[in-house]
Amino acid sequence: MISVVSTMETAPRGTGTPSLYQRIRKVLSRDLLVTLALGQVLSLLICAIGLTSKYLADDFNANTPVFQSFLNYILLFLVYTTTLAVRQGEGNLLAILKKRWWKYMILGLIDIEANYLVLKAYQYTTLSSVQLLDCFVIPVVLLLSWFFLLVRYKAAHFAGAGLCLLGVGLMVGADILLGRQQGLGDQKLFGDLLVLGGATLYGISNVCEEFIVKNLNRVEFLGMIGLFGSFFSGIQLAIMEHKELLKVSWDWQIGLLYIGFSAFMFGLYSFMPVVMKRTSATSVNLSLLTADLYSLFCGLFLFHYKFSGLYLLSFFIIIFGLVVYSSSSTYVAQNPRVYKQFRNTSGQPVRDLPRLGPGDLEPSVTYTSLGPELGNEIPLRIT
Image 1 (cartoon, one colour):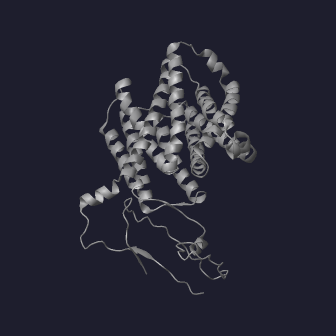
Image 2 (cartoon, rainbow, N blue to C red):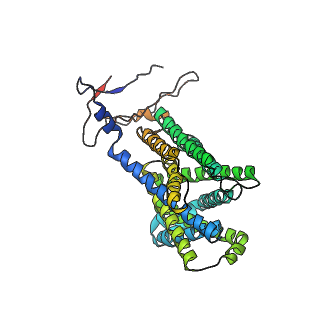
Image 3 (spheres, rainbow, N blue to C red):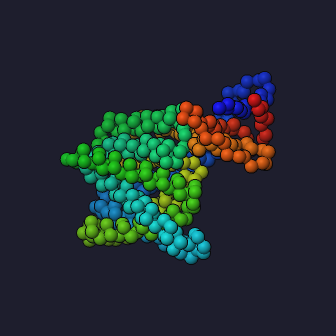
């Protein structure tokens, strides 16, 4: 079988070499800066969630992770599930339940238990272990995106992810040097396993969320998570935490903390699909690695934590890793036979190609980002 290979190259605009400023400006594009900013907004929301949880647990002895998640799911239900209920057509709540109810039920359970396992782990293992092992969500998301979303990565993506994980390692190292071994219990191995389990479930939930918001819509995802999340977390709350709720000394301060936690969590759940639709589950989780650093910086003033220069170094390494990761675009692998539709400018339908023999190699299409500015045509040379 004779194969004809066509390649597209960028025709040279001029003989001059781009300056260092032009190269930096090309990398630090407006889209990249917006992506970084959106990721840091998510990190700040997680920082606020962590601070309110710490005040509830340390100052008021309110250890109610299931109840806190339940409040968030109720808000999602009231806002997004009711929106689906009043919709008409295929986007209606009943129509969605008829088609995909069991899928959203499983996803709701995964989301609930991911939150519960990580919060529960703080009772058994160290803060440093939670911060380090929680990064297991990165390889989980990478693998699931590769196999199920067919996302293909380049060397820059692996290098950026590695730099982000290096920054987390420096942060954990600074914690150990300063003696911040909070949360150490008698069953450290059990706590570490809880973190790994929670990180795995987070990875599954995030990849499913990316698929839904990019192929369906954000309101459907949040509405169904609110429906099944409130139902199953309510059952879990009644079984596991009803005694803890009775022990809480209710006053206006505790009520305000619960309201603040619910508002921040609701904001995180509502805003994350927006960022994920623009970027990806991997990019979002890499951005969230700075959340622990924001918590540490707040702890310097609120809880009088000791400061280490490694914290600043780790922050800039994570940000640099995000820039490296975001500087190159990923692409989605498709059926190799789509090449018969690729750049078919004749307007004539393309006939099916003959079947490939046992020893023949399938042709493939490589999608390359040429990186033009909007509204700026790039001349192409076809060879």
